[in-house]
Image (cartoon, rainbow, N blue to C red; front, side, top):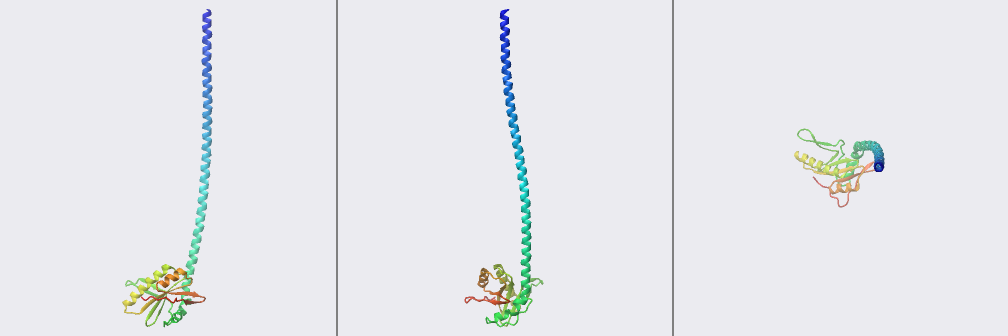
Length: 229
């Protein structure tokens, strides 16, 4: 009987020890679950912060895009306005060609030894066999030996020099086709003439005609030789 009692006590102690161990394990699991839950909570908070930053970045990008679009629209307006103003300036100077350049330009060339009559306003058009315009020359002066063709620009460019040479070649071919063998020379008149453009014009053998007050002047360097077509 005493031995059975001792065995029962030993079994109870064992069961208690097992229960204590199970309880300890459960507490560890509970603590581990709490840590896991805490980490999940941190991840969730981090995700919220990431979402918030994405939204803020998206808002800033949209705002920046709207600001960029606004500036582009403003820039486009400025370009259109400047283009219109430049176009108006070109047209006005083209209209002034007859009044500013044409009336006295023959006198300026006659001072260089030419003998031109008055310069007829309206220019000259040259047509192909189909009646299409091949080229148009702003001002033309003529005498028995020479034809002088002038291109009038507000602000001549180097490209304008190249284009005028082509005009002179077309004019030469046209005059030769009707047995007109007079010498053809060229000039470019401008309200604003840059140094580089003057150099290119003279190197091409074309006269530089510049605005001077309410008239025009021709400045001819000593080494300048007018090209003949």
